[in-house]
Amino acid sequence: MIQVSVRLFASLREAVGQKELARQVQEGSTISDLLGALMREYPRLAQAARRTHTAVNHQYVPVETVLRDGDEVALFPPVSGGAVP
Amino acid sequence: MIQVSVRLFASLREAVGQKELARQVQEGSTISDLLGALMREYPRLAQAARRTHTAVNHQYVPVETVLRDGDEVALFPPVSGGAVP
Amino acid sequence: MSGKLFEIVTGPLSSDEAARRVAAPNVGAIVTFIGTVRDHTGDRQVDYLEYEAYPEMAEPLLAQIGREAQERWPSILKVAIVHRTGHLNIGEASIVIAVAASHRQETFAACSYIIDRVKAIVPIWKKEVWADGEVWIEGPRQPDPATAGAWAGVTPFKAARQ
Amino acid sequence: MSGKLFEIVTGPLSSDEAARRVAAPNVGAIVTFIGTVRDHTGDRQVDYLEYEAYPEMAEPLLAQIGREAQERWPSILKVAIVHRTGHLNIGEASIVIAVAASHRQETFAACSYIIDRVKAIVPIWKKEVWADGEVWIEGPRQPDPATAGAWAGVTPFKAARQ
Image 1: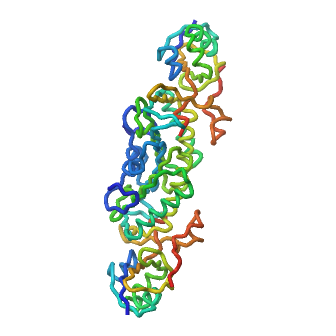
Image 2: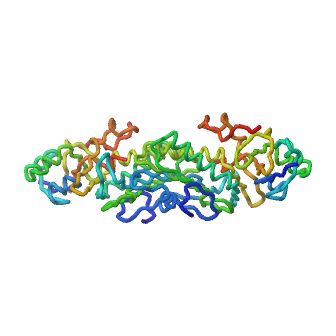
Image 3: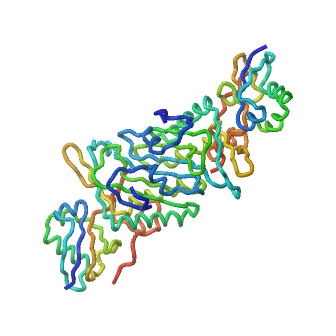
């Protein structure tokens, strides 16, 4: 097992009720695997996270990215810094 | 005869040594006539005024414009508010 | 505000202060963009906004956007981008950008590019709060090379790790 | 500075202050242009500048330029243009323009148009002073419809009187 931290923002943060989580996942797990587990744990996240953006260690990465021990994973909705104007 | 005031700016002001003049001119005189008279009176103005811009009562007008009593005539170099950047 | 060129802050913004961050003796033109909180979105009356950021990721991306602008317009001498988070009332500034050059020609295009890119890729979100409700405003989609707006071709992504 | 939108002043300029002149609850984007005194013109080292204006003619022309910008870009809600005269040291601002709209799309083009027009038609002159001399900087030529720069077709002239 490896250890990762999860940062949550905006509507995803509100759905989970927390800014940050610590999780253990199987070696070889992807962000997608982690997100699926969190959605089972937090049903409201499944609603909010239809269009989740994903970053690891402050870099945008695809959800297929394999996690490593100590990674900081971020899950957030499309940025809107904001949208209009 | 009619009475006009003359405002001078930038290099033209320095050539004449004054910001403002009061002059009497013949009825029917143009700005061009006035400028010619001033150049004879102030030889340094002839040097400075090669590309004089002309305004009457705060409006750009051509040098052929006929003066009226009480006009405020302005003589100045091309504007440079400024040029670069 | 400090002297950092790319910063997420929680206090009020100033365009004069942002302009000072990019000032230099060889600068002749500074363009600033100030994004302010409007009292409406479409027909909806807005009470105030809440901005949230991921600062550890947002600040390096702001710096990246500054570099992108300088690569596209080499006459740009310096860029500063400061974004505010937290509760913002109507009329308050959420972002100030300052772009400096010796001559003005490319400063407008560079500043326009920068605000478009900030809105496309920087992890900052806003929640609109009205008298009787609230909603998180979401950008249109995941930023990627094909969808980064009018300035396509610059991607925020690093290659996927294996 | 006062609350006037178009003004020739003798004291220091502030882009925050200019932005406040155009602020309103429906404004979401303000672009400012700040022209600052450079330490050089080409290879020449500049000590300071002296700006001179014809305020009674300059202020109405600044207002005219504001109206021109709003006719070209109707989304522009408000424009302010403030020009300083007198002795200006390196780094000091000679002009500040602020352009406000609900959305940012046209603010950059409008602000770029305005500074070009100010330099083309407004009766303001500058003298460069160096360690060992000085010179009045002159614009290229009499402003007219064919020579008003990149924005031809708008003339500062009224019809000649007869």
